[in-house]
Image (tube, rainbow over all chains, first blue to last red; front, side):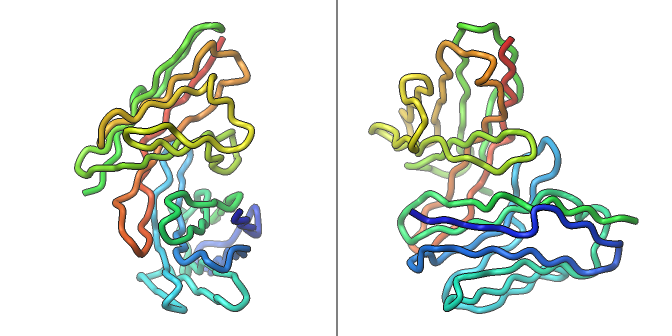
Length: 112
Length: 117
């Protein structure tokens, strides 16, 4: 089955700095890669996603890059703000499989 | 759109009793729903895939007789934790997606905090 590894497990940055979280996946058939943000005690919510037919996607301060050959994808957050502090999960899924495999999560702390 | 509602948000029960958790897709139909368990500061662990009108698919190591799943309609799946024990205390969260051919995000319920005393 699919295996998703996520690094780092914790990340602390100063407000205004950039944060990068990286994930690798094992199943070359996976074609959908979402990123979720989970605040303490709340549900995970999608912040950005990318499909295998593109290499990069950007939404304001958030961007995701995908390298299909190397089977890794990354989340980039620029100009971080304290409200970006949360746990971020990457995931990967195959077409039609339904279920997603999640990384172990990264706890991001943005210091004001 | 794509709202998933989960109830209750928290429940405390005594050891040996059963607890039912409901997961509803409010504005879309979901033939498949997913049940996760999350321990503090850990990732989402998929327990089972709930399939409307058929048996759920359980992940390896998850006891199907302990975690009963019923998906009787296109908008409702239930998870019943039977004969609960303190080690079953956890955060349970369901999710569903608007099904497409090209991949779509999961929409999560608010989660249920289960405490077994």
